[in-house]
Amino acid sequence: MPVRYKVVAFTVALAGVTYLDRVCIGILAPSIMRDLGLTAMQMSYVFSAFTAAYALFEVPTAWWADRIGSRAVLTRIVAWWSSFTILTAFAFSYPSLLVIRFLFGVGEAGAWPNAARVFSRWIPAGERGTVQGIFFAGAHLAGGLTPLLVGALATRMPWRAVFFCFGLVGFLWAFTFYRWFRDEPRQHPSITSAEADKIERERGLPPAHYAEGAMWTRIIATPSVPALCLMYSANTYGFYFLITWFPTYLAKARGFSGAELGFLAGLPLLVSVIGDLAGGWTTDTLTRLFGRRIGRCGMALVAYVLAALAVSLGAAALNPYTAALLIALAAALSMFTLAPSWASCIEIGGRNAGVLSATMNTAGQVGGFLSPIVLAYVVDRTGNWALPLYILGAYYLVAAACWLFIRPDRTLEWKPDALQTVAN
Image (cartoon, rainbow, N blue to C red; front, side, top):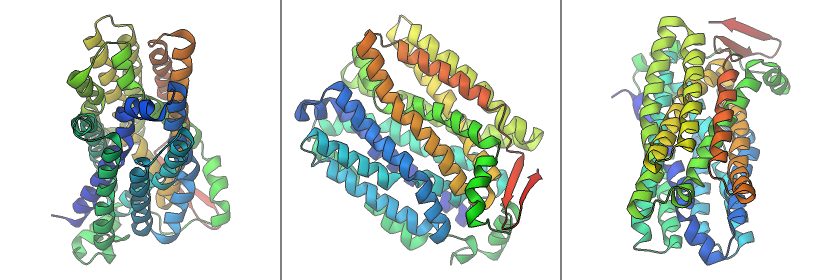
C-alpha cells in the first residue's frame, strides 16, 4: 500500500476521535444538567464555550504548524484535548464545566487545518477532493455511531465514566502517530522514491515560501476568503445544531425516546458519510472534466440550495419520522460541500493551506458558537422548535450564494517580494 494512503488512514482516525469526544456531550447533556443543576441556557453556553476557544486558537495553532510541522502540533493537540475530555468527568459546577470545555476547545483548535496541511504535503492535487471526502466520512461515521455507543455505555456507567473512557482513546492515537508520521514524504523511511517523486510532482505546492510580515495582508486581500468564511459559518452552524440540541429537539418537539431517539440522533451524521464520500468523488470528477469553478463551486452551490429546501420541509413536516429523515438529508447535502470547501483552501492557499483553512474554520466556529445559543433563545422566547430550522435553511441559501464569489481556479503564491496569482 502506498504510504500516502496510510497517512490518510491516520487522519481519518484523527477525525473519528475528534467527533467521538465532541459529540458525546450532546447525548449526555440531560444527565449533566440534572447532576449539576444547569438550565438549558447555561448548557448552551457550555456548548459554546468549546466553540469560542476553538475559534480563538484555530489560526495561531495552524501558524505554529507552519513553523514546526504538523507532526509535533497534531500530537500536542490530541494529547491536550484527550486530557480535557477526561477532566470533563471531574466537573463539579457550572463554572468548572465552562472552564474545562473552554480549555478543551483550546486544545482541539487547529486539528483539521493541520490535517489539510498534511494533505497539501502528502496528497497529489487530483486526489484531494476524494481524500477530503474520506476524511470527513470518518469523522461523521464516528459522530453518527457515538449516540448509540454513548447510549449503551450510559446504561452501564455514569456519564463521568463515559468521558474518562473516551479520553483514553486519543492518547493511543497521539503516541502511534508521533512515532510513525513525518512532515514531508521524502523524510518517511518507508516511502519509495517513485511515490515521493509522484507526490512532489503533482501536489502543486509553489517552491517559494511566504513573507511572514505580509501573509495576513495577502490573506485579507484575497477576494475568495470572505466568501469562504461566510459560507463555512453556515455549515458549522448546522453541524453544531446536530451535535448539541438535535437530540433534545427529537425528544421534545417530535416525541422520540429510548433506542429510537439514539438512532435518529445519530442518523444525520451517519447519512453524512455518504454525502462526504460522494462529495469528494464528485468534486474531483467534475474538476477533471470541467475545471475548478464547476467542480468545486458549482456542485457546492447546488448542494446548499437542496439542503435549505430539505431542512425547511423537515421543519414543516407533520410526521415526526418524515421530519427526522428530511433533516438528516439536509445534513448529508451540507456535508457534500466539505470536500470542495477544504480542497479549495488547499488550492488557494498553496504552502499556507493550513493557515488559510484555519481562517475559514475559525469563521465557521462563529456559526458554531451562535448555533446553540440562538436555538435556546428562540425556543425560550417563542416555544417554537421549527423556527430555528427555518433560520438554518435561510443560512444555507446564503452559503449557496457565497460560492459565486469563490475562485479555487486562482491559486495564490505568497512570496517575499510580490503576490502572484496563477490561474490553473
